[in-house]
Length: 388
Image (tube, rainbow, N blue to C red; front, side):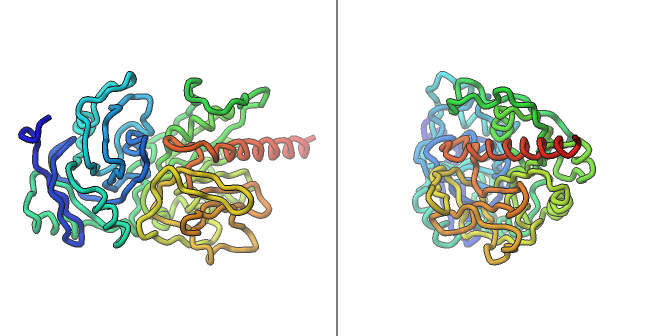
């Protein structure tokens, strides 16, 4: 595509800052919270991650779309972002797995994008002043008119977006990580008995489900509003709390459900939104970060060991609100010392603020799935011994 064929597009931030560029993807107008992702790869996984629902993503890597789109890398059934912002766009991808170009893919799902702007300057602005609402439009090119719509949109704080991405019905997931992409050199299932995990879906990524299946789990995915009694009726060996979008404090039903499930004392593992909801259920509070953590190289740890992790979140647990008698901090984000993991002191319950399944990202934290499986095996053995 030459610039003579390109459609003009306008980006307006809530503070009145404007950027003019060119459209890729769908035409029209979209409004969401503008955030940035620093990953150098994995744009398709980012676009389809339900945790990005309600957001317009700035990709700091300067060229987007080189490898196109393929059905194997989807983290959900469709793109979840409200819009995309890039420096340069590749309209003719070159990769043996590619089945579609990025612009055509976004056009198919009615997701607008803008390219040809200074994404470095825009990212520095978000870092300095914080994530804020913005709008992309090809149909409203008057700055004041688009700004009015942007300023009328709700802020992310207080917004429950889980209902937009959770599954409408119960389903089972059985597909493991395909052998081509399996990075663990040790056999994961071996002679293990199958363990049943109920995954509470706040916006789960498929690769999380694949990792659970790769470790030999039977995974039952349930909607976010499933009552605790119904979850326990599956007689799960463990309960998984998934990632998801929006403000965790607004997911009141999910917090209440998690509180009730804690009474069962079953092994429980949470990731991202699940980590935050577990924190609320244990009595902690969360707060909104200035611009969040979104990238593939976030260091996390506490003592002796550092993991390079994939992260994607706007909110964090307030460490001063954690009930110290019940729960301990297991990991910190080593860039800003925010809470990156918690662990119950007496029960097999833990969570992390990052993505151990990566996709995209490093595999340093995959051992957490193994820990979850071991906790479930130990709990099952204890139950069996009591029955005998």
